Image (cartoon, rainbow, N blue to C red):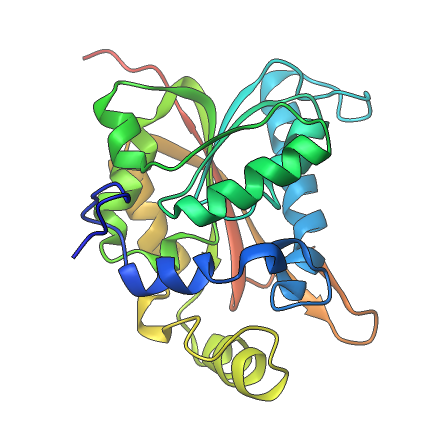
Length: 254
């Protein structure tokens, strides 16, 4: 059952929501349970920034390259991605179905004097309210919903014409099972056991088809790989574990 203070959604997974909401202040602890996300964050920030700038004629080298661009961060958690994008000038709205996450994110943004809007709501509720954004992000969230196809359809509906959509998730391969489940959860203990369910991972082709049904044309696909010697994540051509997709909603005649 959905909690009375939590928006209803066909895509919500109550167990996952509770697991992430329980992190509390640890969302912002770079040495805590979200340390892998903090290390991964610079790669996805740069990827999002560079793709937006290339598509919208911006110079990524400027101090505020994303100034005035309205971005929706779906499943924002504690705001680890929302805040850096706001620092680049974007008008960021972060949404999460867990009120505890939204509270953590809002308080951290206030301490940083960043004007990020955080809402305890769902993509479905925003779509029902006919909201739209220049850029919509579904980063590391698709693998945590109950109905990925329905979720992606809703997320794509929130993209304005000529707007951009980004998704990042885990590929369903034997390699991802070995690294993201056995390695990350049981050996290295980067994340708590049970954080991921391998059967809920999507291949790039599966996710691309869902996004295409949402009216988005994919224009870029990138893998993300971990270098254990340097302890850093980097973009790569290897999509067998982590990958990101970028697409554009083209205005079409009806």
